[in-house]
Length: 103
Ligand SMILES: [Zn+2]
Figure 1 (cartoon, rainbow, N blue to C red):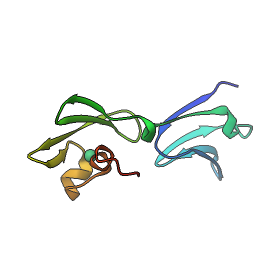
Figure 2 (cartoon, rainbow, N blue to C red):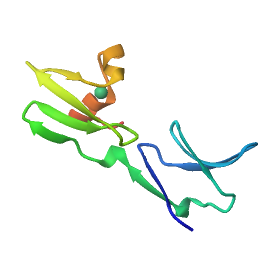
Figure 3 (cartoon, rainbow, N blue to C red):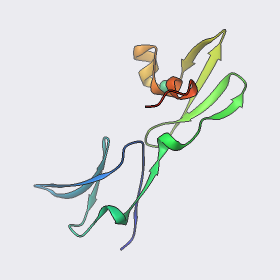
Figure 4 (spheres, rainbow, N blue to C red):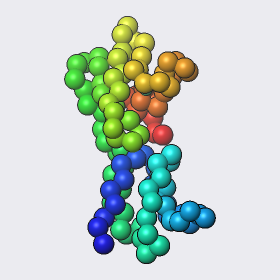
């Protein structure tokens, strides 16, 4: 059986629904067969990917689905982030990651 590759920050689980079986990780749903087990799934845990520092004050942090890099910029000790969550809450998990807080 071909391995299903899931990139996320939440460990996938297999769920059975009226519409069939799915591997679910956070808000990502992947249709799978009834025979699929967790051992058939290759999970890349994005929360274990370290931030990439491209400038002393600019750090790139992977989005939870691994598809996007968000830039956390620290100016005069005040962090900002390019993600949606930061624009709403003025705070986000990417900034937490730079400051070494666990999710
Ligand atoms: Zn962010």
